[in-house]
Image (cartoon, rainbow, N blue to C red; front, top):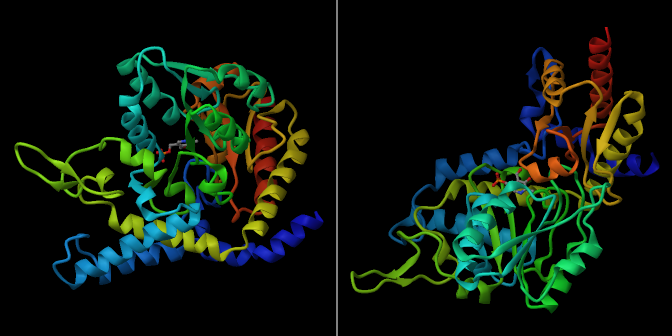
Length: 414
Ligand code: PLP
């Protein structure tokens, strides 16, 4: 509790909550308790204002150089790209590609690498991946004859590292791995695994969608080749995401989509590609959304990230402590190293009933398979209920969740 008090004091959660207008909403007559941050996080007024300002004062198309508004829009858009570059510590903005989100980023990489894959090559993905880091690889495997090899996990929801060492073999070409599991909260020791993969010349693709809301990735320190994430989970807008890619690898990949912006010169005889990062950004980009994501990162950077982590861990610890107050409740995913995500089931209750009844009490959580069906199969459950916390959540909200769960259980017991 001392750590929590220190974390909260440094963080000033009450002041932070005022930055998020939606947190003052009522839902079904109750003050909103938003515990579905893993699905999508809420936006601070700084992000809303940045997008509003962009549309009111500078909107035009980017990279046209024809007039002042276009220059303003381009400066804001490219400024946001540099904010992302600093956030992930990439060497150059040439390595930062705007995408619609993590899903599109991984599809882009999978398609880009297809030409380097052939029959029998192996792609390692883990059993805890989101479908966004499974299905694109399956589609590429079907096209190329490559084979998907799942890395098993332990009953606690951690990667089976011994199995990984065995699977990483002569035929492995790609390691596609999540930094943090969306359904379990497990933080994977990706630095170690990336090092092992790179030693064998394996390309590493990291799904950072659930990691970046909790800590800053350093792509140079991690040593990964690709790192993907979504703006909307990072307190920014929907419709925008990021693919970091190592420059040499991006250079070697063909474009993902064709159209305007991604070309250098077009003729019916031969079309040549634009330089990085524009080679991968066909069409008019999501300009306001990029600006909004830049503002979200600036907002996060204005917080004491250490204090954020401490406060988030305190929320998780408090939730863990309260589990025993709900008989029959079982946490799925008990890894030693976790972000504040609690997946659970309660004996005799269907996850979707839990979700609906919590919603009636103003509490938003996620229920279902979490786009991680192979993981649900591993735990032999059709789905779970999942509370995912952010730095703007409070201990009181954790307690409200458990009080509501106890109430639901009493309701069903009667
Ligand atoms: N990867 C992980 C781990 C996720 O949690 C999600 C979304 O829940 C995704 C990928 C897909 O993100 P998006 O839908 O923003 O593309």
